[in-house]
Length: 322
Image (tube, rainbow, N blue to C red; front, side, top):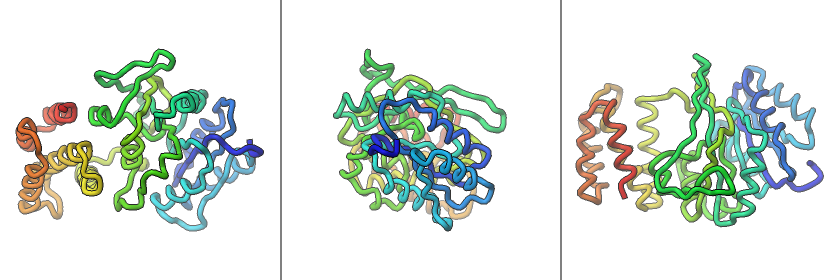
């Protein structure tokens, strides 16, 4: 594969994933394709033996694996930027070091679809959620209303409108068209995450969702964003969507920003933590009101006084209203 320019660049950023990294790498190496691909791995100076495992595999598969691990710890964001810059492929895909692919035809199916459909920017799909502590596996294959089913492929088309209803782009299932990266600049975002990438990839293009299990997403205490609820996640989501709306100022970002203002306000009313003052709560309340554009949206401000067991259904309804 090293003799031809790769059609696809697969990326893995990893840090202290020694118990899992072999499974991740093997899931990439087992891919059956009729095109060349490169596999770029960057370990951010792990201290648990992850780097040694990566080095062993890169020596064993020099025509496929490119080990670009930095010599010192640079953090997840910079590591992601470095690995993205190293990609040569027409398409890009990712799998973090504690997740793994299970479908050996994942790449072939997604790339074949994108090659045949230039008006699509990405493909995503279903996955298995593995709860590390209990070892319980839960299949996650999402459906949205009013989608057009594809008879040639097992799945359906989606746009940003469907993303409002359900987050369809689990990163480890996605393959996307690299040329679309030239149409936007993620460096303008202080809080840039995969969510920002997929927003821009879908802003002017369509996506395709394969209703098939493509890999395993591991949920455990060591994961990058697993089991981190409450104060941290609510404030992070608020910051992500506030910035997204401030920079893009469109209907998608407005609604996502509004939903996450309400979520944070609800959390802040019932929880105590440093910086969560009544002044902050009033500011969020006013912020939510300022974001509302339709009369039907005003009733959702009352969700801040509704227990958790009921409010998620109301958020979903707000997401789906046109």
